[in-house]
Image 1: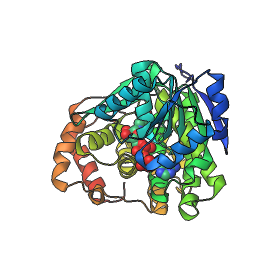
Image 2: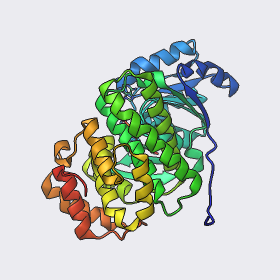
Image 3: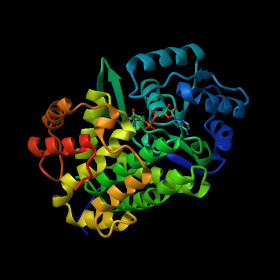
Length: 354
Ligand code: NAD
């Protein structure tokens, strides 16, 4: 075995069904008296239930979280933190709400309890992406990692089928890139393979039967493992392409990850014979070929396959390719403009990866 480095995440995790009822104990355990509850406008119902659970003992509710953590929203939330003298933040939602929790926590030093309701994995990472004047910047700091995460599968039952599918593939993408990360290590690779297995078997069942508790549980568990991978090792081509498409072209996060993943993997495949073998073993119905397995998985999830279906224009491909290769980063195969342009063209057109 080659020498490696492994940094364990320090978060405390509570996982199961009905676990949100443990929030009261958790707040008491940390001696918190006035947590500020965070959500998007769409999840006001769930955040109000948290307030009831905490018997109204909260600093308040801020329901303005939105995609890409815009600084203007963070400023508003910070003013509310000050006004209400909050002593913690509790985020309930997906990566957008958790992003706001991280943005507040890193600026104020307040503890952050996360209750994730999608499969995006932000709760397991020390990474924060923020947007100002239309520009998204990302930073990493161990202090950004939320201290406590409560996974309650019951709260994911309302995640719409389409969002469940794309959010789940977003999680799979973290694990896929962890397998060929520059700082890949055997511990994280174990989590990555298990995360991919859990999600790739449960997501098709969720699509046909969204209230199947066992599949929902397996997907959330897989999402936790995949989020841990994202937080532990560096990502490459796939995440950089999605960052470009999200940050510079405002493409939706999970849907974009879903479309790009098989193409990014096909691009890197010639440099990764061993990883491709393990991946093929982790994906059901792959016939020994990871790209075939991914293409079939996406087909079974009935997700959009073309960037053109998300409003991305063919004439934007050149600019996206230039931005994606303009900022050099490590990747197992050299990142070259011609092949990247062709990758984006195929993804735009919705062709199968190969
Ligand atoms: P999201 O948080 O934007 O949620 C999408 C929509 O689904 C929102 O309206 C939300 O309220 C709703 N929703 C969430 N859970 C629901 C549920 N259980 N039932 C009903 N509705 C629900 O989506 P996301 O994909 O989780 O997060 C995307 C954002 O997170 C992006 O900004 C992305 O950059 C960021 N992200 C960051 C990291 C990181 O490590 N920093 C990791 C992954 C994603």
